[in-house]
Image 1 (spheres, rainbow, N blue to C red):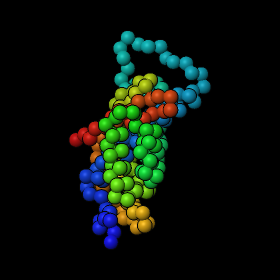
Image 2 (tube, one colour; image 1 turned 90 degrees about the vertical axis):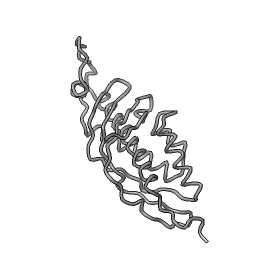
Image 3 (cartoon, rainbow, N blue to C red; image 1 turned 60 degrees about the vertical axis):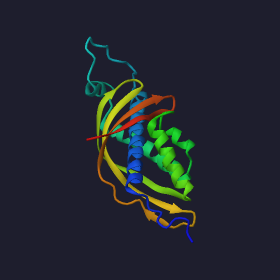
Length: 191
């Protein structure tokens, strides 16, 4: 008799996966900013004005484009997917800032799968839109519209089922940049 008659996760589990993946994608965006800055040929900074620039002005000044943020999110998504496939809770530390609520949520989710003899493979988010809300030297805030696009839940015997359909959702992601690049500090579901 199988330990679990239905290895397919419920709607809450899919929602947690979607939120966690979004956080991962947001961190990937921050890495793009860091790469864009390091690729600058002269490294010169424009002089500061009396009024603080808006997020879009800062992004333009620093050469940050939406595609850069999408790549940062994609890198975070890939790290998260690898952690889930391996059942490696410690590897989620490369996705999230230490102590972040999203890190705790993903670690709990990963532990629930492992406790049932399950792991998630091929986990991938599809990002429909990324909007930069704020950016600084060590932080960025993005609004992201995404959904879980792929993923399977597998048991120890190799039996697999798709995660199921996910709906599009909007999240506000706060990223922090450290020595190892961008990671997700906070994730909030919005409207």
